[in-house]
Image (cartoon, rainbow, N blue to C red; front, side):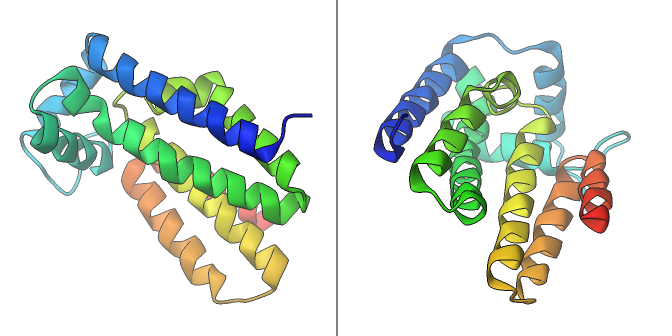
Length: 175
């Protein structure tokens, strides 16, 4: 079985690879569309919440109007997303090595590899969903009701990312 340290090193390598790909791949049509939004920030857009435009603006402030600038926040946000999955795994599985394996599998999935690279509304949605899961794991592990505030914050940020975050609330209701 892969140890926690090995999993962390492999994930670090995947994140570096994601950073290189973010810099060299050309933008897709959707990414260019969202980049245009980042030039005219608003509280929302016709068919999407505003988080992706805000994330792209942050990246382009640092690296300009380049593919890396547009995608930078996806690579940056893969760090907290990975941390949330890793810590939730530790809480749920009670095993450091299996939590490390969950972290590695999360970063190897096609969804994570693409959604934390491409600048689409799914990018911040993945991170907020991971935070939501971590907060629920804290509730289960600690029985501390204060974590419901963090669940609500993660849900709110999720709704600023993508409207499908509503399904997290529905799932939690049944949980």
